Image 1 (cartoon, rainbow, N blue to C red):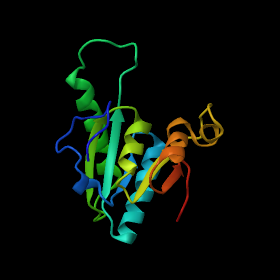
Image 2: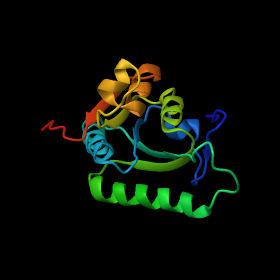
Image 3: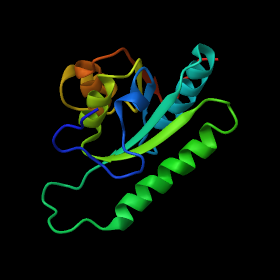
Image 4: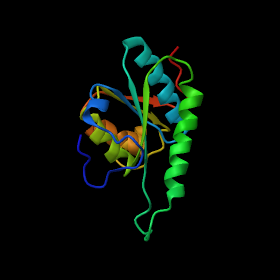
Length: 160
């Protein structure tokens, strides 16, 4: 899969169409809602026999100039690895992790074009469009623009 403008793979291996095709994509940002979304996605993937692609996206504020410190990339990668270790554990679900540079909503919408399902967490604190006010900024934009079904999991969700 060719990444669109503004999306730069920074973790090896880079995302390829054969690694995302039909996978359940989960957006991870370290929040309690993202952890709940990952837990839901792991259980769903286990039930349907699917693989997961856990993705963390990062970007710098528009007014920041100059070279990007490798420490930022390392921090995001380590935070994703810690979250996966804590939530996925020994579930038996195959998980591929990737860190991409870009706006979270744009990264997830692009990945949704080859995913079977997109799962995101939601704090419900958005203040923009109606969907964003109900769901949150990123989750609202993802729901509006994704190319596959989307599941939004609240931080306080109880599904068992």
